[in-house]
Amino acid sequence: MILDLERWIRGEFTEINTALEEIYFAEQAIVLSERSDVDDLTRRLVRDGETLIGRVAQRRELPAGPDARYELLGLVGFYLGACRRHEVEPDQARVAPLAMALSSSLGVAPRFSSAHQHIHNRAVDGAFYTFTTLDSERIFLTYNGLAVIAYRRAANALLSIPRLGVSNPLAAYHFADAVAALGDVLRHSRKLADELDRDRFFYNIRPYFKSHRVGSAEYRGANAGDFAAINAIDVLLGLCSPHDPFYQWVTTDKYPYVAPEDQRLLRSLVTTESLLDMMVRELEGPLSPSLRENAELFLEACRQHGAATVFHHNRLVLPFLAEPAADAPSRPDLTASGPPLEVVIETLARLRDLRAARPRPGLDTARPALDRVRELLER
Ligand code: HEM
Image 1 (cartoon, protein in one colour):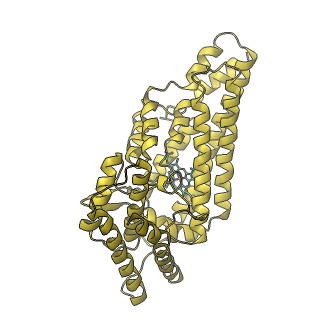
Image 2 (tube, helix red, strand yellow):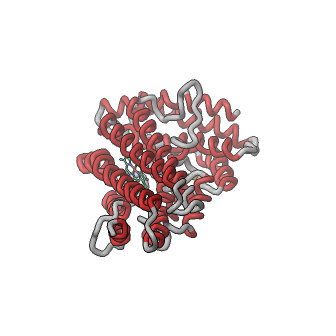
Image 3 (cartoon, helix red, strand yellow):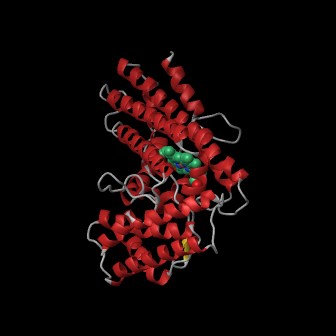
């Protein structure tokens, strides 16, 4: 029965969504209704999804493995995300109990999250789960996925360093790996910015990520940043602090939306000492060649992390979201997460300035500590 749902999501579901997107795009509309072709398609979407999910729910039996349960939550979540996108209401009584049961067994929100699109997206015959067959969605998911994988590689490299110590010659390998991986984040983000069609992304892809209701509660939208590696990098590099109330809010808000294994990593960050603190402490003593090499690589990793976040803001968030939103007909739900767009942009700007250690009045960034590292190296 789960297999029938999976086949439908991989097949007819994407075809219906694609057909609807093509109609909206041709009409320059965000969504349309009271048109017989649109209404036929959305009715089919709602009805077939309800039937297939309802059948799985009726068995009252969940897959034993957590990965299989998380994947099933993604299937129900894609369906609910598509209903929200087309502004049609499924029968929550038939669909929500399965999402809720999966959510409580896994300890995550009962909706799809971006982890269902990058780190937990099982391909069959070379095709991973998507909402549509549009090229823009494939481009977005591919480069976003590659950037997330590169962030995870950087985080794994940095997480290996505390046990070695920052002056260990072996740590140079991990620092260099982190620098290369963060360079890859920027490279994939650039490809995304170059290849993604602005209007297609804004009108036909992003609307699937909106906030929506499951049962009686509303859950915030999915966003490309719902994975823990980026926070591990922030904290290990010492650019963000798990004791800063603003940053605590960022990570707490994210908690139910990351994959279960990422929750463990997020939790561990509260007690993680930063490599920056370790570096300053060691640099205040004798300067060995390996400590010098590692400190230079550490500073390079901070620069790369800053560059990727500045790129995200200036070349992805502003042109692909803020600018088209300014041109679009006014609607209250244009951002994925729910808060007004200006609030989302301001939060991201604050994160950007922390990550890039930019001097900014009223913001406590790592700039003075990074300058201290540089000073100690130039002794
Ligand atoms: C067209 C492309 C993209 C756009 C328009 C975009 C936009 C946004 C927006 C608006 C947010 C704030 C969350 C919200 O909606 O409330 C966000 C968060 C985030 N995005 Fe993107 N994004 C894009 C691509 C990417 C890519 C490729 C990555 C790389 C992995 C990425 C990483 C993040 C991260 C990490 C956050 C969470 C904030 C944080 O913890 O730093 N985004 N993005």
